[in-house]
Length: 487
Image (cartoon, rainbow, N blue to C red; front, side, top):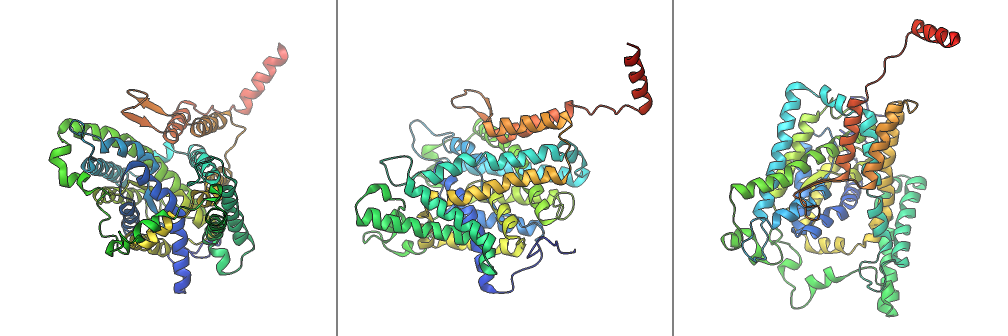
Protein backbone atom coordinates (compact mmCIF):
# COMPACT_ATOMS: atom_id res chain seq x y z
CA UNK A 1 0.00 0.00 0.00
CA UNK A 2 1.29 3.46 -0.93
CA UNK A 3 2.43 5.54 2.03
CA UNK A 4 0.23 8.47 3.01
CA UNK A 5 1.94 11.80 2.30
CA UNK A 6 0.60 13.20 5.57
CA UNK A 7 2.47 10.65 7.72
CA UNK A 8 6.06 10.51 8.93
CA UNK A 9 5.73 6.82 9.80
CA UNK A 10 2.97 4.78 8.16
CA UNK A 11 1.13 1.89 9.81
CA UNK A 12 3.52 -0.85 8.65
CA UNK A 13 6.71 1.18 9.25
CA UNK A 14 8.78 1.36 12.41
CA UNK A 15 11.33 3.81 13.88
CA UNK A 16 14.92 3.25 12.79
CA UNK A 17 16.50 4.03 16.17
CA UNK A 18 15.76 2.34 19.51
CA UNK A 19 15.64 5.58 21.51
CA UNK A 20 13.10 7.02 19.06
CA UNK A 21 10.99 3.88 19.36
CA UNK A 22 11.07 4.14 23.17
CA UNK A 23 10.15 7.83 23.25
CA UNK A 24 7.26 7.36 20.81
CA UNK A 25 5.99 4.49 22.96
CA UNK A 26 6.27 6.49 26.20
CA UNK A 27 4.23 9.23 24.55
CA UNK A 28 1.34 6.82 23.96
CA UNK A 29 1.57 5.50 27.53
CA UNK A 30 1.45 9.04 28.94
CA UNK A 31 -1.50 9.96 26.73
CA UNK A 32 -3.64 7.11 28.06
CA UNK A 33 -2.33 6.90 31.61
CA UNK A 34 -4.47 9.33 33.61
CA UNK A 35 -7.77 8.14 32.17
CA UNK A 36 -6.56 4.55 32.55
CA UNK A 37 -5.87 4.77 36.29
CA UNK A 38 -8.84 7.06 37.03
CA UNK A 39 -11.37 4.31 36.27
CA UNK A 40 -10.02 1.75 38.78
CA UNK A 41 -9.58 4.48 41.39
CA UNK A 42 -13.28 5.34 41.04
CA UNK A 43 -14.52 1.74 40.99
CA UNK A 44 -12.21 -0.01 43.45
CA UNK A 45 -10.49 -2.27 40.93
CA UNK A 46 -6.69 -2.77 41.23
CA UNK A 47 -4.80 0.06 39.46
CA UNK A 48 -1.74 -1.96 38.47
CA UNK A 49 -3.92 -4.77 37.09
CA UNK A 50 -5.77 -2.23 34.94
CA UNK A 51 -2.52 -0.81 33.52
CA UNK A 52 -1.33 -4.32 32.66
CA UNK A 53 -4.74 -5.27 31.25
CA UNK A 54 -4.62 -2.22 28.98
CA UNK A 55 -1.27 -3.41 27.62
CA UNK A 56 -2.42 -7.01 27.18
CA UNK A 57 -5.69 -5.84 25.59
CA UNK A 58 -3.84 -3.62 23.10
CA UNK A 59 -1.44 -6.48 22.34
CA UNK A 60 -4.42 -8.77 21.59
CA UNK A 61 -6.04 -6.09 19.43
CA UNK A 62 -2.90 -5.49 17.34
CA UNK A 63 -2.57 -9.24 16.74
CA UNK A 64 -6.26 -9.62 15.85
CA UNK A 65 -6.04 -6.76 13.34
CA UNK A 66 -2.79 -8.11 11.82
CA UNK A 67 -0.93 -4.92 12.77
CA UNK A 68 -2.99 -2.82 10.35
CA UNK A 69 -4.77 -0.60 12.90
CA UNK A 70 -2.63 1.46 15.35
CA UNK A 71 -5.20 1.70 18.14
CA UNK A 72 -4.50 1.68 21.89
CA UNK A 73 -7.09 0.16 24.23
CA UNK A 74 -7.49 1.15 27.85
CA UNK A 75 -10.06 1.45 30.65
CA UNK A 76 -13.46 2.84 29.64
CA UNK A 77 -15.35 5.54 31.56
CA UNK A 78 -18.60 4.19 30.10
CA UNK A 79 -18.33 1.09 32.32
CA UNK A 80 -17.73 2.91 35.62
CA UNK A 81 -21.39 2.62 36.70
CA UNK A 82 -21.84 -1.04 35.62
CA UNK A 83 -18.56 -2.11 37.25
CA UNK A 84 -19.32 -0.25 40.50
CA UNK A 85 -22.81 -1.79 40.64
CA UNK A 86 -21.54 -5.27 39.77
CA UNK A 87 -19.02 -5.18 42.62
CA UNK A 88 -21.96 -4.95 45.03
CA UNK A 89 -24.21 -7.51 43.31
CA UNK A 90 -25.10 -10.56 45.40
CA UNK A 91 -23.40 -9.45 48.62
CA UNK A 92 -24.88 -11.24 51.63
CA UNK A 93 -26.31 -9.11 54.44
CA UNK A 94 -23.96 -6.34 55.46
CA UNK A 95 -20.90 -7.86 53.78
CA UNK A 96 -18.28 -5.29 52.80
CA UNK A 97 -16.39 -7.34 50.22
CA UNK A 98 -16.39 -6.82 46.47
CA UNK A 99 -17.92 -9.26 44.02
CA UNK A 100 -15.14 -9.35 41.43
CA UNK A 101 -16.65 -12.45 39.86
CA UNK A 102 -19.70 -10.36 38.85
CA UNK A 103 -17.40 -7.89 37.06
CA UNK A 104 -15.59 -10.73 35.32
CA UNK A 105 -18.86 -12.25 34.08
CA UNK A 106 -20.13 -8.83 32.99
CA UNK A 107 -17.03 -8.14 30.93
CA UNK A 108 -17.23 -11.59 29.35
CA UNK A 109 -20.77 -10.62 28.28
CA UNK A 110 -19.30 -7.52 26.63
CA UNK A 111 -16.73 -9.61 24.79
CA UNK A 112 -19.46 -11.97 23.55
CA UNK A 113 -21.63 -9.11 22.26
CA UNK A 114 -18.69 -7.61 20.38
CA UNK A 115 -17.82 -10.98 18.83
CA UNK A 116 -21.46 -11.66 17.84
CA UNK A 117 -21.63 -8.33 16.01
CA UNK A 118 -18.25 -9.07 14.42
CA UNK A 119 -19.57 -12.39 13.07
CA UNK A 120 -22.70 -10.71 11.69
CA UNK A 121 -20.57 -8.07 9.94
CA UNK A 122 -18.27 -10.76 8.55
CA UNK A 123 -21.28 -12.56 7.02
CA UNK A 124 -23.35 -9.64 5.69
CA UNK A 125 -20.80 -6.83 5.39
CA UNK A 126 -20.96 -3.21 6.62
CA UNK A 127 -23.21 -1.53 4.05
CA UNK A 128 -26.18 -1.62 6.41
CA UNK A 129 -24.02 -0.02 9.11
CA UNK A 130 -22.83 2.71 6.75
CA UNK A 131 -26.45 3.61 6.02
CA UNK A 132 -27.24 3.82 9.73
CA UNK A 133 -24.06 5.77 10.52
CA UNK A 134 -23.35 8.19 7.64
CA UNK A 135 -20.77 11.01 8.04
CA UNK A 136 -23.46 13.50 9.16
CA UNK A 137 -24.03 11.27 12.21
CA UNK A 138 -20.48 10.08 12.88
CA UNK A 139 -18.83 13.52 12.47
CA UNK A 140 -20.87 15.32 15.15
CA UNK A 141 -20.60 12.27 17.44
CA UNK A 142 -16.80 12.47 17.20
CA UNK A 143 -17.11 16.16 18.11
CA UNK A 144 -19.24 15.21 21.12
CA UNK A 145 -16.68 12.61 22.26
CA UNK A 146 -14.03 15.35 22.42
CA UNK A 147 -16.17 18.22 23.72
CA UNK A 148 -17.95 16.13 26.36
CA UNK A 149 -14.53 15.64 27.99
CA UNK A 150 -13.89 19.40 28.12
CA UNK A 151 -15.24 19.82 31.65
CA UNK A 152 -12.98 17.00 32.85
CA UNK A 153 -9.92 18.74 31.41
CA UNK A 154 -10.90 22.08 32.98
CA UNK A 155 -11.57 20.49 36.38
CA UNK A 156 -8.17 18.77 36.28
CA UNK A 157 -6.25 21.87 35.26
CA UNK A 158 -7.72 24.12 37.98
CA UNK A 159 -7.80 21.79 40.99
CA UNK A 160 -4.89 20.89 43.26
CA UNK A 161 -5.26 17.26 44.41
CA UNK A 162 -3.48 17.80 47.74
CA UNK A 163 -4.42 21.29 48.92
CA UNK A 164 -7.62 21.32 50.98
CA UNK A 165 -7.80 25.09 51.42
CA UNK A 166 -9.41 25.78 48.04
CA UNK A 167 -10.90 23.99 45.05
CA UNK A 168 -9.53 26.49 42.52
CA UNK A 169 -5.75 26.58 42.55
CA UNK A 170 -3.56 28.94 40.52
CA UNK A 171 -0.43 26.88 41.06
CA UNK A 172 -2.19 23.86 39.56
CA UNK A 173 -3.54 26.02 36.74
CA UNK A 174 -0.08 27.38 35.91
CA UNK A 175 1.35 23.84 35.93
CA UNK A 176 -1.29 22.79 33.41
CA UNK A 177 -0.70 25.86 31.25
CA UNK A 178 3.05 25.19 31.22
CA UNK A 179 2.27 21.67 29.96
CA UNK A 180 -0.14 23.05 27.35
CA UNK A 181 2.21 25.71 25.95
CA UNK A 182 5.25 23.43 26.06
CA UNK A 183 3.33 20.80 24.06
CA UNK A 184 2.16 23.33 21.46
CA UNK A 185 5.60 24.99 21.13
CA UNK A 186 7.40 21.63 20.84
CA UNK A 187 4.98 20.50 18.13
CA UNK A 188 5.04 23.78 16.18
CA UNK A 189 8.65 24.94 16.49
CA UNK A 190 10.45 21.74 17.41
CA UNK A 191 12.84 20.05 15.02
CA UNK A 192 13.62 16.38 14.49
CA UNK A 193 12.93 14.40 17.70
CA UNK A 194 11.44 17.33 19.68
CA UNK A 195 8.68 17.77 17.11
CA UNK A 196 7.78 14.08 17.30
CA UNK A 197 7.33 13.86 21.09
CA UNK A 198 5.42 17.04 22.04
CA UNK A 199 3.35 15.32 24.75
CA UNK A 200 6.40 13.89 26.50
CA UNK A 201 7.98 17.37 26.42
CA UNK A 202 4.78 19.07 27.58
CA UNK A 203 4.04 16.73 30.46
CA UNK A 204 7.70 16.76 31.50
CA UNK A 205 7.81 20.57 31.64
CA UNK A 206 4.50 20.77 33.50
CA UNK A 207 5.59 18.13 36.00
CA UNK A 208 8.96 19.78 36.69
CA UNK A 209 7.19 23.13 37.27
CA UNK A 210 4.67 21.52 39.64
CA UNK A 211 7.42 19.73 41.60
CA UNK A 212 9.43 22.96 41.97
CA UNK A 213 6.36 24.85 43.21
CA UNK A 214 5.61 22.08 45.73
CA UNK A 215 9.19 21.84 47.01
CA UNK A 216 9.68 25.61 47.31
CA UNK A 217 6.21 26.76 48.32
CA UNK A 218 5.02 23.88 50.49
CA UNK A 219 8.08 22.06 51.83
CA UNK A 220 10.26 25.21 51.88
CA UNK A 221 7.79 27.90 53.00
CA UNK A 222 5.06 25.76 54.56
CA UNK A 223 2.26 27.17 52.38
CA UNK A 224 -0.29 24.41 51.67
CA UNK A 225 -1.60 26.29 48.63
CA UNK A 226 1.55 25.22 46.75
CA UNK A 227 1.12 21.53 47.58
CA UNK A 228 0.30 20.39 44.05
CA UNK A 229 2.30 17.15 43.80
CA UNK A 230 1.37 14.29 46.12
CA UNK A 231 4.47 12.18 46.85
CA UNK A 232 2.61 9.74 49.13
CA UNK A 233 2.76 6.94 46.56
CA UNK A 234 6.57 6.93 46.92
CA UNK A 235 6.48 7.41 50.70
CA UNK A 236 4.15 4.43 51.11
CA UNK A 237 6.29 1.94 49.20
CA UNK A 238 9.67 3.05 50.56
CA UNK A 239 8.78 3.73 54.21
CA UNK A 240 11.07 1.74 56.60
CA UNK A 241 8.23 -0.41 57.93
CA UNK A 242 6.94 -1.33 54.45
CA UNK A 243 10.00 -1.62 52.23
CA UNK A 244 10.53 -5.03 50.69
CA UNK A 245 10.28 -6.95 47.44
CA UNK A 246 6.86 -5.43 46.71
CA UNK A 247 8.48 -1.97 46.82
CA UNK A 248 10.13 -2.84 43.51
CA UNK A 249 8.10 -5.69 41.95
CA UNK A 250 4.33 -5.64 42.24
CA UNK A 251 3.57 -9.35 42.57
CA UNK A 252 0.21 -8.78 44.31
CA UNK A 253 -1.28 -6.63 41.57
CA UNK A 254 -4.28 -8.89 40.86
CA UNK A 255 -5.34 -8.76 44.50
CA UNK A 256 -6.83 -5.56 46.04
CA UNK A 257 -5.21 -3.86 49.02
CA UNK A 258 -7.33 -5.95 51.42
CA UNK A 259 -6.78 -9.57 50.33
CA UNK A 260 -9.59 -10.77 52.61
CA UNK A 261 -12.12 -8.87 50.49
CA UNK A 262 -11.05 -10.66 47.30
CA UNK A 263 -13.94 -12.65 45.93
CA UNK A 264 -11.95 -15.81 45.22
CA UNK A 265 -10.83 -15.99 48.85
CA UNK A 266 -14.17 -15.34 50.55
CA UNK A 267 -16.74 -16.00 47.84
CA UNK A 268 -19.04 -18.20 49.98
CA UNK A 269 -19.00 -15.73 52.87
CA UNK A 270 -19.71 -12.43 51.11
CA UNK A 271 -21.65 -13.18 47.91
CA UNK A 272 -24.15 -15.44 46.24
CA UNK A 273 -24.43 -16.13 42.54
CA UNK A 274 -27.52 -17.48 40.83
CA UNK A 275 -29.34 -17.00 37.52
CA UNK A 276 -31.06 -13.87 38.84
CA UNK A 277 -27.69 -12.31 39.68
CA UNK A 278 -26.33 -13.26 36.26
CA UNK A 279 -29.35 -11.58 34.65
CA UNK A 280 -28.73 -8.42 36.69
CA UNK A 281 -25.09 -8.37 35.58
CA UNK A 282 -26.13 -8.85 31.95
CA UNK A 283 -28.49 -5.86 32.17
CA UNK A 284 -25.70 -3.76 33.64
CA UNK A 285 -23.11 -4.48 30.96
CA UNK A 286 -24.82 -5.37 27.66
CA UNK A 287 -26.54 -1.98 27.02
CA UNK A 288 -23.25 -0.17 27.68
CA UNK A 289 -21.44 -2.49 25.25
CA UNK A 290 -23.67 -1.10 22.47
CA UNK A 291 -22.58 2.38 23.50
CA UNK A 292 -18.86 1.61 23.40
CA UNK A 293 -19.37 -0.06 20.03
CA UNK A 294 -20.48 3.34 18.73
CA UNK A 295 -17.37 4.89 20.31
CA UNK A 296 -15.31 2.14 18.64
CA UNK A 297 -16.71 3.04 15.23
CA UNK A 298 -16.21 6.77 15.78
CA UNK A 299 -12.57 6.39 16.85
CA UNK A 300 -11.78 4.14 13.89
CA UNK A 301 -13.49 6.54 11.46
CA UNK A 302 -11.44 9.36 12.97
CA UNK A 303 -8.17 7.43 12.82
CA UNK A 304 -8.95 6.30 9.27
CA UNK A 305 -9.30 9.92 8.16
CA UNK A 306 -5.97 10.80 9.79
CA UNK A 307 -3.96 7.98 8.22
CA UNK A 308 -5.82 7.90 4.90
CA UNK A 309 -7.25 4.38 5.23
CA UNK A 310 -10.70 2.84 5.62
CA UNK A 311 -10.11 0.66 8.68
CA UNK A 312 -13.73 -0.49 8.95
CA UNK A 313 -14.63 -1.35 5.35
CA UNK A 314 -11.11 -2.12 4.14
CA UNK A 315 -8.17 -3.65 6.05
CA UNK A 316 -8.33 -4.91 8.77
CA UNK A 317 -12.14 -4.54 8.63
CA UNK A 318 -14.73 -4.02 11.35
CA UNK A 319 -15.11 -7.75 12.02
CA UNK A 320 -11.49 -7.89 13.19
CA UNK A 321 -11.46 -4.55 15.04
CA UNK A 322 -14.65 -5.40 16.97
CA UNK A 323 -13.55 -8.93 17.89
CA UNK A 324 -10.13 -7.64 18.97
CA UNK A 325 -11.72 -4.99 21.19
CA UNK A 326 -14.24 -7.45 22.66
CA UNK A 327 -11.74 -10.20 23.43
CA UNK A 328 -9.42 -7.62 25.01
CA UNK A 329 -12.22 -6.52 27.36
CA UNK A 330 -13.07 -10.09 28.34
CA UNK A 331 -9.41 -10.86 29.10
CA UNK A 332 -9.11 -7.61 31.09
CA UNK A 333 -12.08 -8.73 33.20
CA UNK A 334 -10.49 -12.07 33.96
CA UNK A 335 -7.36 -10.22 35.14
CA UNK A 336 -9.49 -7.96 37.40
CA UNK A 337 -8.71 -4.91 35.26
CA UNK A 338 -11.24 -2.36 34.00
CA UNK A 339 -13.22 -2.81 30.78
CA UNK A 340 -11.29 -1.68 27.69
CA UNK A 341 -12.23 0.67 24.88
CA UNK A 342 -10.49 2.47 22.03
CA UNK A 343 -8.70 5.61 23.22
CA UNK A 344 -9.32 8.88 21.36
CA UNK A 345 -6.35 10.40 23.22
CA UNK A 346 -3.97 8.05 21.43
CA UNK A 347 -5.69 8.69 18.11
CA UNK A 348 -5.03 12.39 18.75
CA UNK A 349 -1.35 11.63 19.42
CA UNK A 350 -1.11 9.95 16.01
CA UNK A 351 -2.87 12.91 14.41
CA UNK A 352 -0.52 15.48 15.93
CA UNK A 353 2.77 13.57 15.57
CA UNK A 354 1.91 11.89 12.22
CA UNK A 355 3.46 8.67 13.52
CA UNK A 356 0.96 5.89 12.79
CA UNK A 357 3.24 2.89 13.30
CA UNK A 358 1.33 -0.09 14.71
CA UNK A 359 4.67 -1.41 16.00
CA UNK A 360 5.06 1.72 18.13
CA UNK A 361 1.60 1.15 19.62
CA UNK A 362 2.50 -2.51 20.19
CA UNK A 363 5.70 -1.53 22.02
CA UNK A 364 3.66 0.96 24.08
CA UNK A 365 1.42 -1.95 25.07
CA UNK A 366 4.44 -3.99 26.14
CA UNK A 367 5.76 -0.99 28.08
CA UNK A 368 2.38 -0.66 29.82
CA UNK A 369 2.61 -4.31 30.93
CA UNK A 370 6.15 -3.83 32.26
CA UNK A 371 5.40 -0.66 34.24
CA UNK A 372 2.37 -2.35 35.81
CA UNK A 373 4.74 -4.80 37.49
CA UNK A 374 7.43 -2.19 38.33
CA UNK A 375 6.24 -0.56 41.54
CA UNK A 376 8.50 2.57 41.62
CA UNK A 377 7.50 3.57 38.08
CA UNK A 378 3.82 3.03 38.84
CA UNK A 379 4.26 5.17 41.95
CA UNK A 380 6.01 7.89 39.91
CA UNK A 381 3.15 7.97 37.42
CA UNK A 382 0.68 8.36 40.27
CA UNK A 383 2.52 11.49 41.44
CA UNK A 384 1.82 13.32 38.14
CA UNK A 385 -0.79 15.95 39.09
CA UNK A 386 -4.13 15.91 37.31
CA UNK A 387 -3.46 19.58 36.46
CA UNK A 388 -0.53 18.63 34.23
CA UNK A 389 -2.47 16.00 32.33
CA UNK A 390 -5.39 18.44 32.19
CA UNK A 391 -3.21 20.95 30.35
CA UNK A 392 -2.25 18.37 27.73
CA UNK A 393 -5.87 17.15 27.57
CA UNK A 394 -7.00 20.62 26.47
CA UNK A 395 -5.17 19.91 23.21
CA UNK A 396 -5.98 16.20 22.99
CA UNK A 397 -9.73 16.55 23.54
CA UNK A 398 -9.90 19.57 21.26
CA UNK A 399 -8.08 17.63 18.57
CA UNK A 400 -10.69 14.86 18.80
CA UNK A 401 -13.50 17.40 18.37
CA UNK A 402 -11.69 19.10 15.49
CA UNK A 403 -11.35 15.73 13.75
CA UNK A 404 -15.15 15.52 13.66
CA UNK A 405 -15.30 18.92 11.96
CA UNK A 406 -12.60 17.78 9.53
CA UNK A 407 -14.70 14.73 8.60
CA UNK A 408 -17.73 16.92 7.79
CA UNK A 409 -15.55 19.14 5.58
CA UNK A 410 -13.91 16.20 3.79
CA UNK A 411 -17.27 14.55 3.14
CA UNK A 412 -18.62 17.92 1.87
CA UNK A 413 -21.68 17.83 4.11
CA UNK A 414 -24.13 20.48 2.93
CA UNK A 415 -25.44 22.54 5.85
CA UNK A 416 -27.80 24.41 3.56
CA UNK A 417 -29.76 21.18 3.79
CA UNK A 418 -32.07 21.46 6.80
CA UNK A 419 -31.95 17.71 7.41
CA UNK A 420 -28.22 17.91 8.14
CA UNK A 421 -28.73 20.89 10.45
CA UNK A 422 -31.40 19.04 12.47
CA UNK A 423 -29.24 15.93 12.83
CA UNK A 424 -26.06 17.80 13.82
CA UNK A 425 -27.97 20.07 16.23
CA UNK A 426 -29.64 17.19 18.06
CA UNK A 427 -26.36 15.28 18.40
CA UNK A 428 -24.28 18.25 19.59
CA UNK A 429 -26.73 19.65 22.13
CA UNK A 430 -27.81 16.32 23.63
CA UNK A 431 -24.25 14.98 23.74
CA UNK A 432 -22.51 18.06 25.14
CA UNK A 433 -25.47 18.87 27.40
CA UNK A 434 -25.28 15.42 28.99
CA UNK A 435 -28.70 13.99 28.11
CA UNK A 436 -28.86 10.40 29.41
CA UNK A 437 -31.63 7.76 29.38
CA UNK A 438 -32.15 6.18 32.81
CA UNK A 439 -34.33 3.14 33.45
CA UNK A 440 -35.54 2.23 36.93
CA UNK A 441 -35.01 4.47 39.93
CA UNK A 442 -33.46 7.72 38.57
CA UNK A 443 -31.28 8.03 41.71
CA UNK A 444 -29.81 4.54 41.26
CA UNK A 445 -30.94 3.37 37.82
CA UNK A 446 -30.64 -0.25 36.73
CA UNK A 447 -29.59 0.84 33.25
CA UNK A 448 -28.13 4.15 32.11
CA UNK A 449 -27.56 5.00 28.45
CA UNK A 450 -24.90 7.69 28.46
CA UNK A 451 -25.08 11.02 26.65
CA UNK A 452 -22.76 9.99 23.80
CA UNK A 453 -24.94 6.98 23.06
CA UNK A 454 -28.12 9.05 23.34
CA UNK A 455 -26.67 11.62 20.94
CA UNK A 456 -25.87 8.89 18.42
CA UNK A 457 -29.31 7.30 18.81
CA UNK A 458 -31.05 10.63 18.19
CA UNK A 459 -28.86 11.25 15.15
CA UNK A 460 -29.60 7.79 13.71
CA UNK A 461 -33.36 8.14 14.26
CA UNK A 462 -33.48 11.62 12.69
CA UNK A 463 -31.43 10.42 9.72
CA UNK A 464 -33.95 7.62 9.15
CA UNK A 465 -37.19 9.59 9.53
CA UNK A 466 -36.07 12.74 7.68
CA UNK A 467 -36.19 11.36 4.15
CA UNK A 468 -34.59 13.49 1.46
CA UNK A 469 -37.15 15.28 -0.70
CA UNK A 470 -37.07 14.45 -4.38
CA UNK A 471 -35.65 17.29 -6.44
CA UNK A 472 -38.25 18.88 -8.68
CA UNK A 473 -37.66 18.57 -12.42
CA UNK A 474 -37.33 21.76 -14.50
CA UNK A 475 -40.78 21.02 -16.02
CA UNK A 476 -42.40 20.87 -12.56
CA UNK A 477 -40.63 24.07 -11.56
CA UNK A 478 -41.97 25.88 -14.71
CA UNK A 479 -45.54 24.68 -13.98
CA UNK A 480 -45.33 25.92 -10.36
CA UNK A 481 -43.86 29.23 -11.55
CA UNK A 482 -46.69 29.70 -14.11
CA UNK A 483 -49.32 28.96 -11.48
CA UNK A 484 -47.81 31.52 -9.14
CA UNK A 485 -47.82 34.14 -11.96
CA UNK A 486 -51.50 33.46 -12.72
CA UNK A 487 -52.38 33.93 -9.07
